[in-house]
Image (cartoon, rainbow, N blue to C red; front, side):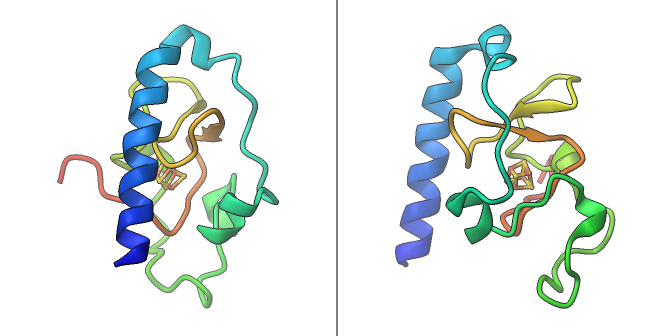
Length: 103
Ligand code: SF4
C-alpha cells in the first residue's frame, strides 16, 4: 500500500511539474543519473539492453522508456518521465515501473 501511495504521489507531482515546466523548458533539465537513489530504487538503466534480467525478470527485452506510458510525448531521445520530476530519462532507458503505452 505504501508503495502504491508513493507511486501515485510521484505520478501526480511529475505531471504537475511537467505542466509547469513545459516541453521546451524540459530540454534544459539535467539527465537522471543511474546512481541517483530514486533511480537505483526503481532499477533505472539509461540503456535498457543493460538491464539485469535475473534481477528484473519482468523485463522482456522489448520494454523501454520510449514505449512506456509514463514518458512525455515527443520525439527527443531525452524526455521527462512522470516518476522522476525535474530530470530527463533516455528514451532507450528502462525501470521496473515500466507501463505499456496505450493500455
Ligand atoms: Fe519512466 Fe517508464 Fe522509463 Fe521507468 S520505464 S524511467 S517509468 S519512462
